[in-house]
Image 1: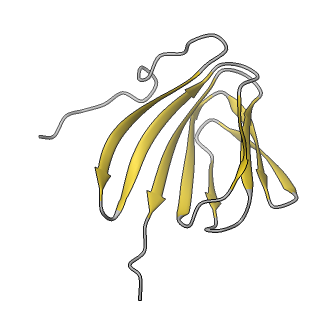
Image 2 (image 1 turned 90 degrees about the vertical axis):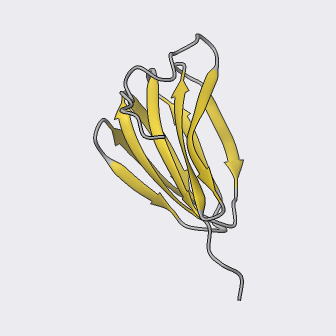
Length: 105
C-alpha cells in the first residue's frame, strides 16, 4: 500500500540513540530512514552491497576507506560495496539509506 512519508518527521530523534525505520524491504534491497542523536555514530564496517545516503537534515561526517566527507542537508554520497565506511552525527542527523543488492552470478 502506498503512502506519503515526511522524512523530517520519521523517525523521531532520541537523545544518545540511533533510531531507524524501514520504509521498503525486498530481495533487491531496502530503504531505511535513520535519526542519529548528536554525536552518535555507526562504527566502521563493510557491506557486500552498494549504498546511497541522502542527508535529510543535520550534518554528519562520513568515512569511506581513509577519506572523510562532511554531508549536509540535501546532499548525497555513495558507499561502494566491500569498502569500509562509518557515519558520525555532527548534529542531530537524519539520513535515508538505500541499499542495492546485486544478483549473484
